Image (cartoon, rainbow, N blue to C red; front, side, top):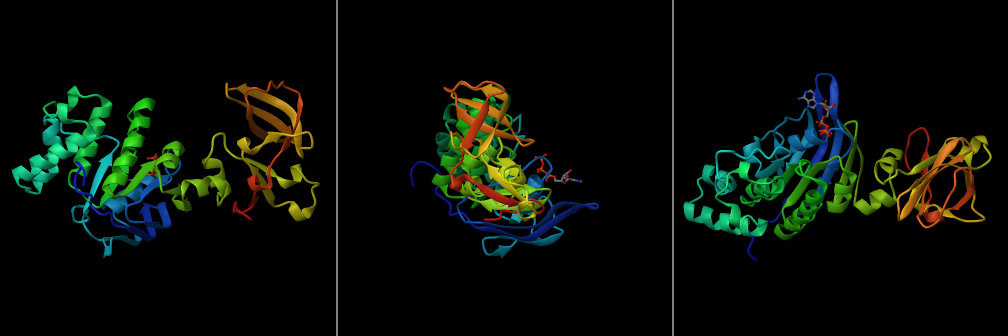
Length: 345
Ligand code: ATP
């Protein structure tokens, strides 16, 4: 429908206990993920956590050492990349510099021997969809970063594959363009209906685009959840710290309650933005540092030797050394096991 390529129904993807070893080191360890058809799933985590390796195993660019990968109802674990019916976009767009924009976009169709008239029709549709119609005769070297990015996207979507895999495709763009492309990419994916698996280390990118965020840590699955659930109910202290800026405060219960053995192995988690000033507040301490941000002020307080960070309205002037009392709604309190890092409630 519309003026885009006919929407290709996405296929679901499943990883079952997938593992990858590089020498003796486990880059990916017992990872199971369910990626619903037509969803936008983001693989998120710090550098070296195994995001790219996981994506490359789904793509078939990297073999798996353990487990299975299914695309649709097919086990593709031992299938060549070219047989997996996927498209890919990488950080380096890898456009052919000597080919025009038009030739770059239809390159894959040509390889697959799609007839010229059909190639042309698809090119016109995709160029129109991505705002590239005026640029088709140019070479990549004559394009801005954002335009090159669009060409790489065009090349990926013109084949109407049910699955698209992207590895940090926006990281070469400046902040403004990155924001625009995020919105465009999400809209495009929803409109065309393919299944997207997208790698980033940027939590904002993950939260704003994903239906599902898969958080990896040291090759292991930390949590897979919708963005809101990841923020509101982090399953582990790692997830609690990774999502949200500034990160969630994690305070030993002994710093708040009288330290008796019963509570000694628990951590209270409270996000800086969940704290508010209250005369009868239970958490209190002298202010160590103040960072005025205009709309907000970040305040560090000493809480029995721990630092508690609060995000308060910028309108309230706060002085170093002042003793503040904070309230927090019970809904905004998280409880974790100190030794395992797992959520308790
Ligand atoms: P980044 O965000 O930095 O790209 P990542 O989360 O994508 O990181 P991977 O690239 O998947 O992480 O790497 C996971 C681990 O596997 C890292 O410790 C990395 O050094 C290691 N690794 C990746 N590729 C290879 C390889 N070809 N040979 C040996 N080790 C590798």
